[in-house]
Image (tube, rainbow, N blue to C red; front, side, top):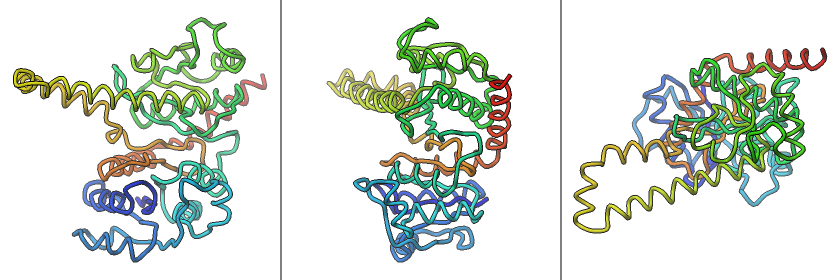
Length: 335
């Protein structure tokens, strides 16, 4: 299996992508293509001992920054690392691609170059969030801010298939994000989406509220990208605040430090469950080939988790199932 990694994307590029790639070829039985400025990537790789036949470099002299207009940059910068990676994926020169760079550029590359699955109106970012009952999926997490009911239905279907195939949940529950549990709650979008989700080939449990996100009420939370991105950033901020507060409490004085010794195991387990680096990246569901968006601040551990996630994505028949279920939904809607 060959994973294409954008070596120039993210705050810690190329260090983190290179570090993670070296670890991946040793532990995950994959090959890696690092896409970026060849001399820079080669210099970073020279610090590691790794099987030379497992890592190759595809030269890309340009980088799309966070300050550029994504779609325009993708069209004009043909030799940008994320664009080169997407073209390689489209041509079958790799099985999946991963980038920690400009989110908009990755979305544009996925849509304009890799292409969307026939029948999928809009691909969506699907990210895993920590909860009291384990990781849950939030879809869309920021790719689409203006959605129609059919978009949210497709998000729910794709998220359900991902949770079943990749996380092994037999019948994932799907909840519609709203401001109340009752069927009549919400804005026009959620009200119109509700009856469509009831007909969809998923385990729909109705509306869920903000508090249900961290309680883990639903395995899949479907919403538009504006709401989803607000939820995502809120959870990330909450994780940071909670971990910082807990650390400050136990470092307050000698007695609290002694107390920390006895609960260190539980604290480490809690910290790990809230660490985004454990969950990898956010798959862009709805594209013809596997595309993964890694967190912009990813370190080597986070990039490694995202590569492992990409491998799992490829190993399942996820895209084929999405195609089949979307066709099934279309048939039901036409009845």
